[in-house]
Amino acid sequence: MVTRGGRSSLGCLFLLLLVAIALYVGINVGEAYWRFYEFEDAMRQEVRFARQIPDDRIKLHLSALADSLGLPEEATTITVERTSSDIAVSAEYTEHLRFALFARDIRFTPRAAGPL
Image 1 (cartoon, rainbow, N blue to C red):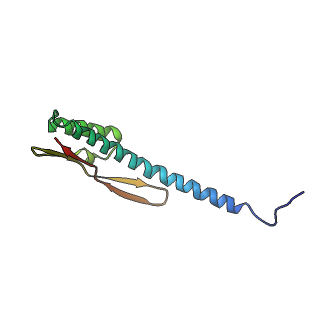
Image 2 (cartoon, rainbow, N blue to C red):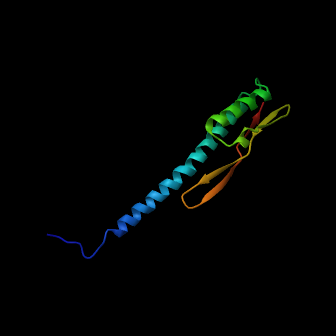
Image 3 (cartoon, one colour):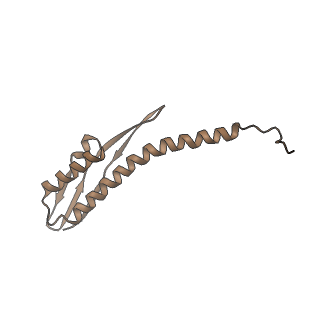
């Protein structure tokens, strides 16, 4: 019969605790960044077809998407800057992330630009 030489399982429990904490924080932060990337991707899509779409419709579509993604109210304030040859669409918002022992604000500035 083989026995372990005085080792305890506390090292394994500590490692499992660290992994659980990393997953908890990573999922919350990951969700915020995932929503940001979805929103920015929608902006790129709007820029791609901006020649046929008026600015008001771009703002309305992106505002509705921000609402459906669960972004903060300030994300529905969309800025569209159009020149004769280019267009840029942007927004700014802050996600407030709460964790068990602390909270953190992350500022996002999704932006897409391209030719008309």
